[in-house]
Length: 267
Image (cartoon, rainbow, N blue to C red; front, side, top):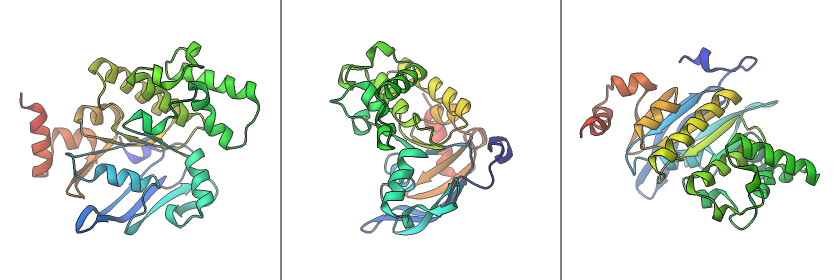
């Protein structure tokens, strides 16, 4: 799928621009001179083996960990491309509650496990100043349904949910403010195959229905193929190959990508 095909009508320019990003841990270059553009409505997968730097990159893009060099530019609704780490702290927090979302690999890292499902989902709205209890509950019920959670579970706490339900609850918690960009950190890791398939179908449906851009970190090439328009392949902190997902996975050019693909195909 081309840039023009993934771009939402009425938008101009990339949603996210990453320029020469670097992140070090001592002598280790976890992210080494990474640059790319992400377009509105586009889903981008970042793949590679453990330790390749993909999760470190994701957290830097999401505003969680300032890079040592380079810039992360987000196309804000009124202000245009703005350096995420140059924004005042209050503006960055507001952006994280509205236009950005983050789904953690461990649901417990993205949920408040001791409060109800409804309160988890409505929390972002409350952080934006909404106080009408009936409306908050109505919106929470709506989003529980949209992520295929029984609305009668609205008053149950997440620790009573299965792993797949907890991940869907995380998704609802993020999407209630209709963000334009979601970060997904291994969202299907540790789930049973059937649960993975159901969650992936949900993510594919929601990204298309909402015109949502997403950056997905995964070690599973099948997940990348199902969800992503484009794929970046990382090795030792560097992007060694990038392109349309089917092209990268069906006709890999870099030796490392060829090894990744062959390791999946080899019994």
